[in-house]
Structure formats: structure tokens, C-alpha cells
Image (cartoon, rainbow, N blue to C red):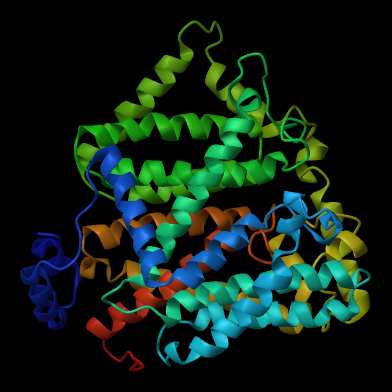
Length: 471
């Protein structure tokens, strides 16, 4: 059975048990994937199904990923220059996403759970509008356009979603597959920095990647498959699933060498969520304790210092910096102060469009919330904040109705929530979905999925006094 009736009886209101019993007996849904290869097949199959059911949104999503690490300054007249061609994509994808959305927006019905992504879209439109107020209007418009195109593309999956084709779920799996492919490429080109025993740190990985990405950028690519590996090992079945644990340990070790503190703490928060809220059983708690003890023992062999592990971890987290550097978060607080002063002096209400932090605060602002305020002004920031609040409400609503989920649904929700926790923690020392980046490309499909799943479960089992909109 994909749903445990004993758990249902304990966790769900008695008035909902008739619905749950019907679902349990019908055998709907999928069980957790089996082992290492089963979990890979599960995601690839779902990704291919997303492409089959929604080819245009899927193609748009892939092309948006292809636009990473470009800008209007990399556009040249050389038609054979791949980077230049990729840089032109926003001027094509933006109008296409708008046209496709306008012709399919009837599919986004009232009560479809689109509140969070609609709020994010309104923020993006304000940031795009405020390009006229930017010291660099061309880059501001460029990145504002590709931001809006990304949000609209994710909403296209919602417009075509049904409970039969499960497009909202499959679009998340498509995102996992694309991200994993990018991560493999990044790890391959950065392998000497990430895994060479001759280098103590990979913090200066920018040189290895020929200026394409800093350690904080690479950390995002690595952290997501690490979270997925841990989740699939924890939820999966069969002995082969334990092959995912070395994958997690390897990626987590690489993340530590990158010394991206936001990603390190984000991964820690996501891992704790997976282990604590997953299988609450004494045997799994014992397994975690034994595993951690084995890792610590293995890492300590051959090292004369009794504090070798703690010293190594702290060395990478502190990067050998002074206490003042740690307090200022490597100069981030000075950027935050400048950014706040710019907005305060401007009256707060109007923003300055994308890239405003680079022009007005002297560099990357390294804070999601302040970046959203600078880009969209106070009026745009309100909608940006609202998108986060609605998303977290959706997560909590699904979590407390988790007994309604079959094994496959619970796994996908659980790992998606863990990744959202990663980005939530990372939102303070870095920027996430306030601008176009890997973060936005991952988070938008998750926001759509959470909204759809929360609404579906509310219709099946509304709580006492809860008002549910009909589709």
C-alpha cells in the first residue's frame, strides 16, 4: 500500500478518514523509488513526461537555463559565438513567454494555488518597470525581462496541469534533471579545485572556471543534488540506495571546501529537516548516530590532533579570517548599509530595477530582501515578501496533511521543502529569487508545485472552518 492506514488514523481528523480509506484501497500514486538506479529512472521518466505533456514550457525552461552567466555586455556581432547567442535569448524568450502565457492563462483558475507565483510575478513586473529609473537601463531591462520570462514559464506548467498528467510535479522533476546535468558539468570542470588533495580550499574556484562562477555560485549547483541524494537514500528502498550516501558525503565535502558559508549552513538546515521530519523511528535514529560516528572515526584515523574534525570544519567556515571579518560577514554589512542608505534617501517607494545594487551600492548586495527592495521599491518588495509568506503557508499546510500523500508524493514534497529551507537560510548572506539566477530557476517550479499540492489536499480534506475555493 502506498498509504499507511495506521498513520492516517493517528494524524488525520476522523472526518477525513473516509477519503483516505478510499484512496488507500484504490492504490493510487507511486511508491518510493527503489535504490540508486530506480531513483534516477523515476526522475528522468517524470522529466520526459513533462516534456511530452508541455513541450513548449519545457523547452522555454531549458533555454532559460542556457541563458545563465550571460548579459547584454556579452552580445557581439559574431554569429558563431555561442556565448553571444545565449546572451540574446532573453529578447526572444521574454516575448514568447508572454505570448504563451496570455494564450494559456485561462488554465490558471481561481483556487489553483497560484498565489505565491503571481505575487512574485507582480514584483518582477515592478522591477522591470523601474528599469527606467536605473543608472544602467539596458542591463536592468535585460535581467528584468528574463526574470519575468522565468516566472511566466513556471506558470505555464500550472496552466496545463491536471491531476492526471501531474505536470506540476513532473516540472519539478524536470528541474532536478536539468540542475543535476549542470552540476555534473560544473563539478567536472572544477574537479581539481574541489577534490585535489594538494589544495586545502576551493574558495578561489573562479580562476579554475575561467571567471564563469564564484564559490558561492558553484555551491548552489552542488548543494541541490547533495540534498536530493540524502533524501533519496533516506526514503528509498533496497540496499543500492545506500550508494547515494557516498554521493552526499562527497558533495558535502566539496561544499565545505568551497567555503560558502550560506550554502554550508543551508545544507545543514536541509539535512536536519530531512532526517528529523522523515522516518521518525528508533532504528533510523540509531542508524544516523552509527553513520555519524563512523564518519568521524574514519576522518580521525591517522590524524594526531584530537580536534582534527572540528579544526578542519572551522578552518573552512572561517576561511582563516579575523573576528572583525566574521562579524562583518566578509564586508557584507557595509554593502547592506550602503544599500539601505540609497533606498532611504530615495524615499523607498520606487525601485531602481535589476542590477541596482551594482550601480548604487558599489557591488553585489548579498542579501535577498535588500536586493528585492532596491530592485522593486517598497511596492514591489511587499509582493516579493508576500510570495515567500504564501509559499511557507503552503508548505506548512501540506506538511500537516502529509498523511494524504502516497510515498512518491511525500518524497517529492519532502525533498522540495528541504531545498526551499536551503534557499531560505541562504537568503540572508546571499541573494536567491530576487533576481535571475540558478536560485530562481529552481525555486519557481517549486513554488508552483507547493501551491498546487496544498490546494489539492485542501479540497480533499479541508480543516474545520477552512474555506476552500473551487476550481
